[in-house]
Image (cartoon, rainbow, N blue to C red):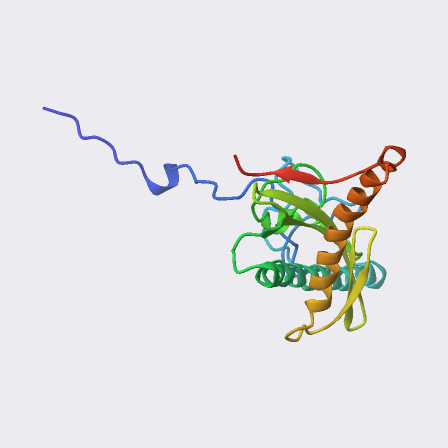
Length: 230
């Protein structure tokens, strides 16, 4: 007589990890994420610092400690708002600039501001705050990779954004800074598109002129170009 095969119970199955390795997720005001501005949550078993924790029972912390909680919470709310505004602007810039340059798709990508990159969108990893448990309340940088040749060469520009009141200021590396009123209206980004186009054109033309006039050997020609196609 054959033995009955045991069906594994749901409890015995191994949970599948659907997480994306290497991407940063902003910590919302109600998420039990780790706060890392020279701070960290205590963890008895070295668990990932952004794992959801069981809600703690309400405790009367006292007015002094509670005041620290309150000001840190206010900081966290604003830092997330700052990140969300800048990310929204960056994504609008990516899509709008590509459409402004050409009808051909995939000519602009959001990439990390430093290190190696490929011709793809890096989502949250494109921003300078990626991988930080607690979003800092400060200007945020991201990389903008723009296609500059038939051979799929992309030039990366490091863009830096900061918010002042209802205005966002966007700086192109060490070049021009363009102010963008919030919320962004139709056509508001065209001056930024033009500034980026001018920045890249001048980069190449200045070095062509230096070479043609015999001056290129006396200066450091730095660039961030990478060929993506084969």
